[in-house]
Amino acid sequence: MKRIALFFDRTYVDAHFCFTELARHLAKNEFQVDLFHLSNPYNLAPNFFEPNISVRQFPQGKLEKLVFTYRRWFTDELKYDAIIGTPIHGAVLGCRLAKEQGVPFFYLADEIFDPLTRYHKLENWGKAKSLDKKANQSALASIVLGEDRFTYQKKVNSLSDSHRHFLIPNSPSGEVKKLQSHYFRDVFEIRDEKPIVLFIGTLNWNLARTIYEETREYKDKDYHLVFHGRTQGLMAQNKPHPFIKVSKEPLPSSLLNYAISSADLGLVLYDQSIPQESNNGWTGGKIGTYFKNGLPVIAGNLDSFRQFETNGVGAFWDGKTELDLMIKSTLAKTDFLQKNIPAFYNLHYRYEKFFAPFLTFLLNSVS
Image 1: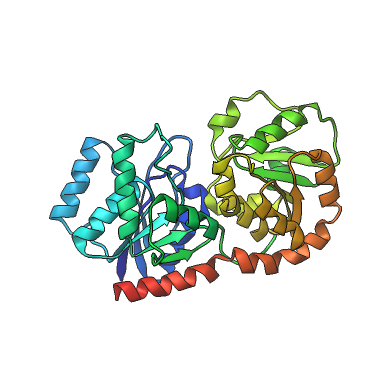
Image 2: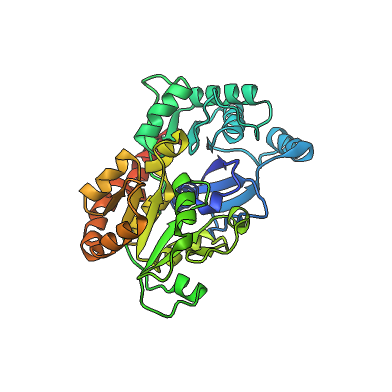
């Protein structure tokens, strides 16, 4: 069996399908997977219940780094046939280890760090970004979440036109299926039959904050509005909202589809006036997850989101029209929109379809 290391210096691995699905699909295809990640009290540690996946702590601090160095130099514990890493420290460490062992390295561009932007959370930013850039350039290929993001990545990391990349969306695998679920109705003791409009994410997003504030004057409506956040920290800082029901408990990835299936409509909230949001928009994990669970969307306000309306799987929101009107008009046609979701999902977000070419390339690279 081939061995592969995934160096994900992220605290939220379990909350994103671009990480969990990659590990699961590699394990299903005869790879022994070592997944390295960071941990903190606000995020659940990934738990795969897969014998071929081992979850490990990403080395931090002097002692952990010393132990890791000993294992990589003096034992066979960290010997791999291929390595995948996320920017910045995961990519740098993964690239170094791959060079030492003479195995392929792949750069998973879940984030794109522009060197012109100062990221205060990263120590020695200039040096770190320079090493990250070199790691990407030397990678056998990049795994990207979207073509527009890859265009930006090429510019930021000075990649050649010949740099190989594989687009694998940040979405769950499997066919579109709306599970029989009452998750949010049970959590909030909702006894009526009003539909649930769901937003997955945090209040960091500009339009999400706008909605959170504007709906404070809402009274009883013909629907329920639920915000579900990955971490408690940000939402716990806010006072109870008179209309929005805020779900503060982070869910394991194994329960995400079940929870989301209990809603009827999904909100996709990215602001075209904010570069970070406009760059992330199409690749946001919430989009594929909504569609996987049969939820039409209201998406604002990136121009790329207009195709949801054009393809009959959702509605485009300019960010100015009153949200209540948007929700009511979209809920009125959910039956029509739901019928179009499977074909659209299979074309743009079906994980297995996009993973297959990368798997073929990977197997040829390690054979």
